[in-house]
Amino acid sequence: MSTRLFVGNLSYNTTENDLHDAFSAHGTVVEATLMLDRTSGRSRGFAFVTMSTPEEAQRAIQAMHGAQLDGRPLTVNIARPREERPSGGGRREFRGGDRGHRY
Image (cartoon, rainbow, N blue to C red; front, side, top):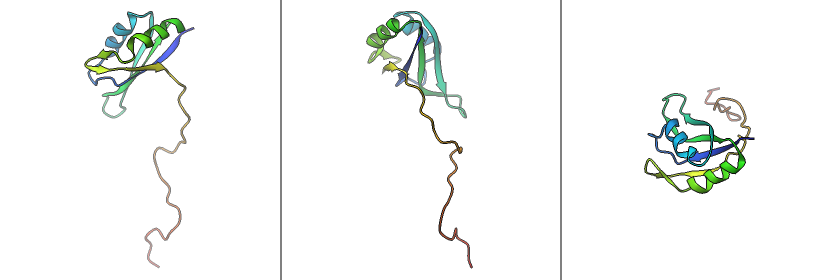
């Protein structure tokens, strides 16, 4: 069973290949996915790396947490499920008041 890791504090220059190479020294990397900004296409500074077994994931955490990659100390831990967020696309509804209307 594979284990997904969160990798934070990445340099904006780090690529998925860089992650794959760095983590493959500690086991089999199933997937390395760099999170990109939707509008700019630029790295958001974090990624997810999936290791093939929980034991390899633990070895990768021990070896890579705090290790330097592209001049930055990495944060590496087991990825948690994404928390549900309310939908709405960032719109805020105004409630109360006269909303600036003149009567």
